[in-house]
Image 1 (cartoon, rainbow, N blue to C red):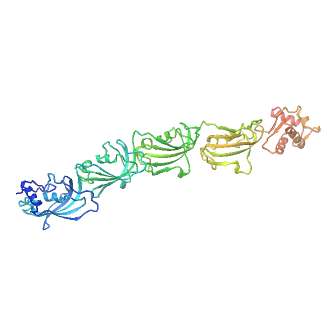
Image 2 (image 1 turned 120 degrees about the horizontal axis):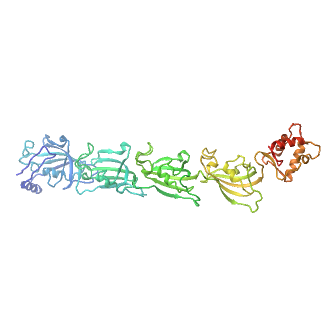
Image 3 (image 1 turned 90 degrees about the vertical axis):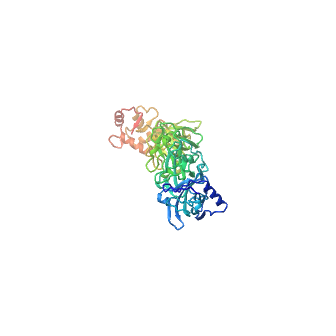
Amino acid sequence: RFLLSFSPHRNALSLRPTLTVLLTLIQVACGQLEDVIIDRYFIPTHCSREVQVGDYVRYQYNGTFKDGRKFDSSLDKDFPFVGQVGVESKVIPGLDKGVQGMCVNERRKITIPPHLAYGVLGAGLVIPPDATLVFDVLLLDLWNKEDKVQIRILHKQQNCKRTVMPSDFVRYHYNGSLLVGNLFDSSNLRNSTYDTYVGQGSLIKGMDEGLLGMCVGERRSIIIPPFLAYDDKGYGTKVPPYATLIFDVLLVDVFNVKDDVKVEVQKIPQPCRRRTVVGDFIRYHYNGSFQDGTVFDSSYSRNSTYNTFIGMGYVIAGIDKALQGVCVGEWRRVTVPPHLAYGENGSGELIPGSAVLIFDLHIIDFHNPKDQVDIKVIYKPAECNLISAANDLIMYRYNCSLLDGTRLYSSDDYPEPPRVTLGQGKLIAGLDEGLQGMCVLERREITVPPHLAHGTNGASGVPSNAVLLFELELLQLQKGVPEGFLFIWLQDSPEPLFPAMDMNQDQEVPLEEFSAFIKLQVAEGRGRLHPGIDSDVILGDMFKKQDRNADGKITEDELNINVNEDNEVPKHEEL
């Protein structure tokens, strides 16, 4: 006989078998008694695993008699049945047998004859003797105590330089679902990554394990059995007790709090004559991206370099450090951990909290506010009798470029090379300085810092704060006169001056005679006119100054008065 009992307070029908139960099962096996009838009326398309003896299951059920009257339902209790199959089972033998081979999401109608249910005794007032029972079952979950975390790699980057290790901090997106496919949570719906430490107890054990070894950009499906997830407690109303969880994970970021700035030098010019130090002012282009390749900022999109001082806190600490020791024209990839970037707060809507940043840098130029003009002589003729100086009139060729080789302008763009008087403020200060001290046909390469060039404002075609590189060749040189003078004596002037100037000795010097006298001094090397102005204009101005009464001629008295008023020896003629 069966010794069976029905407990309406439990999640499932319970059984206390005796030897009679075992005999009955033997009879069923031998075909002497009717067996369980299984109607698999819904089978899911995908079935990766079937229920076996020893597995744990979680399922919903409706229990009815053959006439359709309901006697029990997990749905009425608002909690599915949870138990182990075939091992000290808590359910009647027919139900235990009927769920074997089921897939998650499968629906079965299991018809159980009396001898595999409650037999001739029934179960209290609920189940009458010799009752055939019908269970409509939906399998929700399936696991085994021997199960491990299952990892399925859906996509992995070919170039994976770093994988997640214990104590790393990660940022990832995920979709979390139950085995039946119900989505219970998603970071994507919140449009925000989940950020946490790995292996520090901040995550369920299965997720801690499932994240290890991931690369940025990798996608994984992580299947976690209940005892490595939320076990019998579940998680609020989202995750029921004893739920296997499936997480589809995309790793966005990984770093460790011990990480320093990582610098990869991708291209370095040869030779590199100078490297940056703290206090230098630098101009560079950059692309800023996250580890998954998403670009968040770019100087190229603005068509303007980023300009800043190095090591003075004007940029994030990681970039401040990475900009030290670079060469002009160098390319670097810099990986900056959050604690050396924008930290856990991020920066507005542009950069999320705890984001690792990658900067691809191209160094355009740099200088120091204390820099002077750097002069490199490329060619100097063997004979050099005259050298250029302030107030000299010169003609020269030039090419001007940025330090990265970008051509700005050239004298070759014009019909003739330019002529200019040095030291008169006609040129930028650095170029004026670089053109002085040159011999005719000498070639130079000069580097001009921005404070001696176009400064912070730049110029047409010249960026602000740009260091300029000039290739120079001096073509012609006419020695000049000091600023404020139109004519100077190179030797002592005649003494007395007026008789020498009065070439026809008529005691008066008209403009024609004055001009002829000065031109004779220049021709014989005793004097020099201002080289940048037409000689007739200069001579006319000089004459007017001496002709005090404007009668068209200079007398000896007028000449002496001018000399005394100027308080100058008659070596120079002042403007």
